[in-house]
Image (cartoon, rainbow, N blue to C red):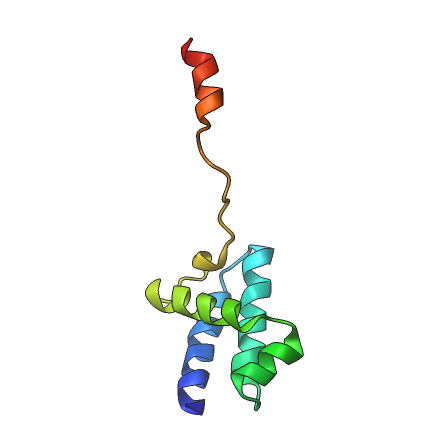
Length: 91
């Protein structure tokens, strides 16, 4: 298990070199801290103030996205269209 954690950490480190987005860098660094710690995931997440749910969600996103760190960028939950706003323009 420790070897798997370290291999994931190495992949993140390799991809981190070309990232300029501050939000993505912060998330990646927290992931690295948790992955490289000697503690188990639960203890490490608690120590660094990262909810375990977020940790596992970010790891899943990275694995599905071939460790492209841009998947860590927050996506807006704001709707692209509003029915009320669209109605004003059509009438």
